[in-house]
Amino acid sequence: MNDIVIEGDVMGTPLRVLLVEDSEDDAILLERALRRSGFDPQSLRVDTPEDMQAQLDQGGWDVIVADYSMPRFSGLAALALAQQSGLDLPFLIVSGNIGEEVAVAAMKAGAHDYVMKESLARLGAAVRRELDEAMVRRARRQAEAENTRLYGETRHQASKLEALLEIGNDLSATLDLSNVLQRIACHARHLLEADKSDVYLLDSDGETLRPIVLLGESANDSTAASIKVGQGIIGMVAESGIPEYVNAVFDDPRFGRSAAMPAAEKALMCAPLVSRGRLMGVMALERSTVSGGFSQADLDFLTILARQAAIAIENARMYAAEQQRTEELGRALEQQHELDRLKDEFIQNVSHELRTPVTIIQGYAELLDSGELGPLAPEQSQPISIIARRASALRSLVGDLTIILRAQAREFRHLPVNLGEVINLMMEDFRLAAVQAGLELKADVSSELDPIYGDCDHLRRMLENLVGNAIKFTARGGRVTVRLFQDQERLVLEVADTGVGIAADQLERIFDRFYQVDGSTTRRYGGMGLGLALVKEIVDSHGGEIKVISELDAGSTFRVFFPIGD
Ligand code: ADP
Figure 1 (cartoon, protein in one colour):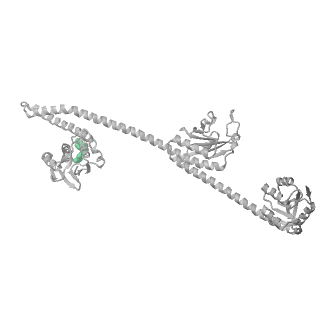
Figure 2 (cartoon, protein in one colour):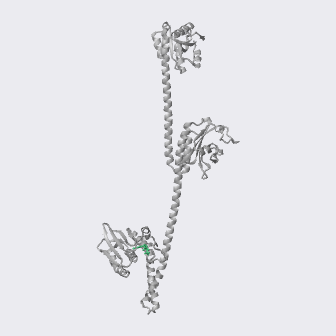
């Protein structure tokens, strides 16, 4: 192997030529031919496979020009070596006695061109063309490689987006906070190929970050401790709210060096968990630097993930708070029901205990009052009749309480009732009361209407209360009107008066038990405030509806709607 140094044309195109040639003379001729074609060849001649291989390994060649036949080597064997090297170098064969078949075989084997020694003038043009083609091939390969890289990159991004979408779905599928946090840490660790993935949540003191999920931690790891906001890298990220990665954690001034510092360097990447401008915690991922540090793309991804995670945490917390509220409300409702039950039980017991003695008192008082047990002295007569009246009122109150409780418990009869007939039968008593009160009583009640189904006694009590109130709350000279008519599938009872009326803000409450618009002890009208509660209970138990319209000092109209038929 000999270096051939030939002073070249300084203006020529530099060309590094690997000559596979046994004859030095021929090599000189080849170089001259190239120089004549405008090249400035820097060439090296080899004539054995070993030397050629060594030069290929060393690299830096622009073109290979090989003699077809040599004593210890051949053009085709050299071609094979060049191909094996994987270098895409223009390969030209030169031969003195190349026949057409040999030339065809060489081209088939992959040589780029062949040139006869007799017409070396062609060599330069052939080399130039092959260099151009090699350049084109290289450019195409580069473009292909770039395409492949871009394709890979796009696929990678797409798969990350897909993963984010999946995480979004996955996180919204659960509302259990610890489960949500566990999943977040797990996804982050997996997608960002981290060795450790931790989630810290901010304590209610607003200063302490408490580790809630620690994935990949060894049991006695020091990072499992709580961190103060503003302390160390994680604490600083919490304070600044800016995601960050640090690829040489131990060199970072914020890293608190401890005696038990692990030997291997590590990379740390953190993102704050912020929802509606409020810090909720921090996600922290760790990689040993052996497996490579984090990149900006990793940080961007973690930032998006942290945003989703914050929303999921917020949702889980809201759900938990909502559930707690629902439970509390449920408990309060249960308590309320229990109180209602105790109250009803109490009323039931009291009315039960009162019924017999009150009936007896009323009975004796009336007996005394009637004089059947002998004449009463004048000073005895008035008190006795008061006792008899009051005992009778007390008895009807006890009766009302019993009706309310029965109606509420749906313990009543369910028989056809001709409401018109019932009203007309009661009209006599109403008229008497109206006359006593100095009122006009008008009635427009037909007894030809369809029956309703229910309890006659209860319906009678309802009428007594409505008409009784109308009379009670209307001043002398006023008017009370009772109407009963059919409106499609409903029977309508209307009791109207021209009395004191009810203020609009009281209308809702008059149906409450023991409620009176004027509940003072100095009130003008008697009563217990139980009448309308009883009316409402009876109407409800008959599947009906009651409405009232009223105007202060103008009067009130109570309308009751009953469904007709069974
Ligand atoms: P009370 O035993 O006091 O009559 P009610 O339950 O029957 O109890 O009525 C409750 C309150 O509704 C009454 O205290 C009264 O203020 C008002 N009220 C009922 N009916 C009338 C009416 N026709 N006109 C004016 N106010 C009425």
